[in-house]
Length: 392
Image (tube, rainbow, N blue to C red; front, side, top):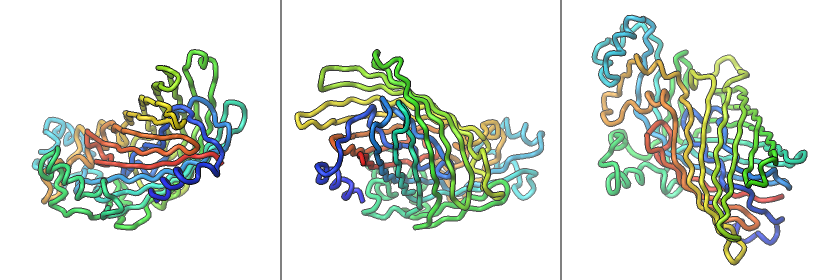
């Protein structure tokens, strides 16, 4: 599919309407977080103005997720909670008998490469306004070569062994490479059990953007958005609602070189409406907020092609309420020793990652990106993506 995208961009440009660069050339870079894919997290919009013609965007993404089995007990007894607050998280399991703990419990294990497909149709409506209707879908794979060349376990551990990280820093080799399994039991006893090739989730998203013009003469471009997402998986069938705001500042170097700086924020009320009674609990925080900053340098070649290089930093609030981490009791898998608690504990930490992007735009805008979670907080260790956008 990636080869088809590139071929489309290169060979069929004369047969489609002209497509001009509009702001920061950034596809969806929302991570394939194993909990986050089940809700309608929002991508930040760094366009300068509303679309003037209908456009279609197709995005493919691939992210490696990993975390050994961890049981998490949330004590209901206040005396036990107070005792656990004085003990380092990794030692708490030594002070209790898990068979006798008066507590709620959930259990999680993640392994594999999550493949994502996103399709967005943008339609101009009124002046300075546009409607975006999108589809997202995800499946779990074992990441075998050549379908996941840079995001499979073997490549990542080769990188750790030879470049950075050291030998098997996350115990992947202990449990075996290039496998696929996501197992999750929430605190209500509801279960998710997925393996290689299993469909995970899908959703329909609707976004409405308004672009005021009162700062455009200063080359500052704003937009405000309202968002509705419908989650369509058997594990979470619900509707999320959200609001967003973003701004872009343009700095011209000359008539062929310029820099764009974007800053965006949004807030999402997940599961605002539950469409079934047995949805899994994918986080105790009802509201999820995020902030993103992106800087992009662009030059226009003699062939009238825009070449854009971007760097983005994305941070999101935690999925779980942070207070629980102060007294939770984490029980590790007997075979796990390195970084064994991240998969659970980092549900209580703010989520962040860096993304490096390259886009070339002529009549088709084609983007490539690579994403890294340096703080190992439940995002993929490595995620890659490719996107094409064109007028129709």
